[in-house]
Image (cartoon, rainbow, N blue to C red; front, side):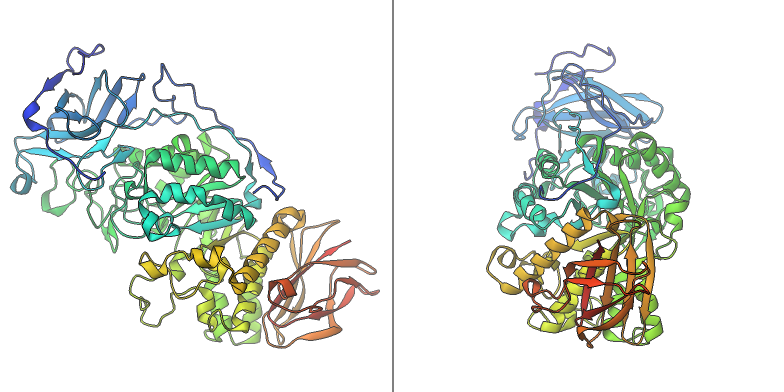
Length: 636
């Protein structure tokens, strides 16, 4: 049994063997530009949690003060007789109770002789509550700040003491090449219960493609299917594995030179299995209780009560856990248009103050540079690049007009108003455009698809060439390029959690020729993007515009080593060096081909582009341009 508490005479244990209920389920070939972590967490006190860098006034949850002593803090303004109930990790031991002491709206206490892995939950008594008709006068709740929880019950698990993440040298922001994946479907169906561990095993695959950044779709516990219905903001999603498994995933990624971004959903609570609803018994008129009262509904769940300091600090604590406990290198904030602007400014300001080397990315609709210049993010998702490319390929909504088409290409290459790293581009689609929850008919038109499926399928030569050209063009653009899992293998149809729409490891590891060609292009393009300095510098200059033929030429970088990118999205082609193009770099310069999306090894043909070009007295070159292609020449 637990020993008497040493630090507070008003906090003690009660043993009640009769209430022991509650059992549930249980790249190394790339050259990186390094930045050094700028924060260091204090060492653990006597085996307890490492001292946090970011001090948050209303932070709650369990805190290890030594290897066997854990303190608890709970926000329950309407609770009475609040206790923490503990039992063994398998749920079979006698129930132990820690009586908490109220301090204003919070309840606190401490337990000795406890160990990581023990089950615990919060029990609240009340002489009245809005949940009495369904739950009675005694409420059993999860700890909203638990780091691990049993998915199908009210039990949580005491986490291992927090250890400061190991410092490492991450790729600089402007060098990031982002691979977006959904952990639960990156794994085969028979490995879903160990998805964190499986993904860890497969990180070498991402490194082999030249990726130096992985963005994980939400990994905090959720009640939906894709991750965007968070139940517990601080707890990892237990159906995919343990908190330790997720920490190991981040460590393994770092060992391979891969940064890790977590996707967090702070704008609303879960519409399914919401464990925060009426949390301390208060919830008149279906207001949702202390975490939601006074806010409006969204199509995905009710917004958090952003006006409350306690809720604000709950969101901050979720961000702190990502960085200080998992060691991630940045955070992507979902759907920030559903959050108050002042709150975004507060969050970004405080995160930057404490962790200046962490990248903050927003998703906002419609996308706007103000989310960077005013709200404080470093970058935001730019969905428009994908939709503009579709307009061009399908020739609708201006995509068939030569002038508008060229304007779309220019804005993809250099999004208006966005700084160098300001836009995250996924021309071939993110999970939003590729995923479909309705058996391929989410919008009634079958447009939620992998890009190649919108261009005739992977058996169509033109479709494959067009995917290669768009991918290479995206890597030429300012901003941060991103791809969604499976796109590199020309995976078809749509992505979902169902068996036939998960990541296809047969394509990734088999002998499929089309997949191998696309992966070869992806790897080569990523290598150029990271290793050629000009490709990630601020400068971009448009030097050639041929609207009628849909050819755009632009320079990346400045000075020696500048690159000339030539994008051509059309059926016409020019052979034997017959196309004249202004370089904007003066006479007599020599240009060497460093990437050709129509090279034979990628699925094109031998001699589709000239290996070397010499500019004439006016700085003009005469080149071969294949159909549906992206070429990169570097000045020698």
